[in-house]
Image 1 (cartoon, one colour):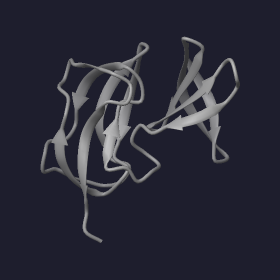
Image 2 (cartoon, rainbow, N blue to C red):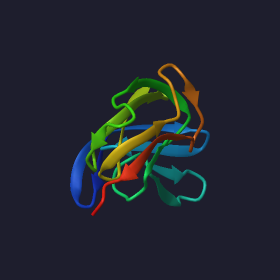
Image 3 (cartoon, one colour):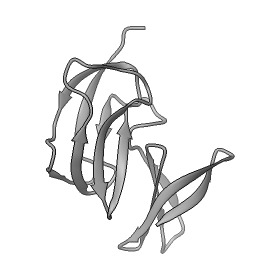
Image 4 (cartoon, one colour):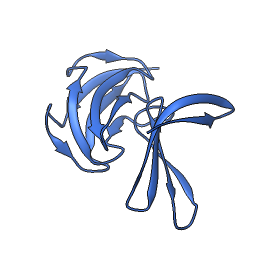
Length: 125
């Protein structure tokens, strides 16, 4: 379902779904979860808003598009991969500026939560 969420004081449209007692919300390349039992919230990085050199699957799903190739230069926040999960499409973004080192998935592949999908070599500062 589409919802409106406030992140850092700014309203965004997002996709949300409850799956096995966890509310998953995906907005602007980030995935957030809230445990329905405890109400505890966390942020599972999906490619934006951090400094990781690895783009990881924010939830189990299917890779539908790979937008970069090894050797491609990317900027922080640039889309690198699209996946489908819970009948929603998620665009995963790079956390850092750098060069794509490797891609550990293929279009059509089902991937597990937390699987490393794209490795990025950081740009020299």
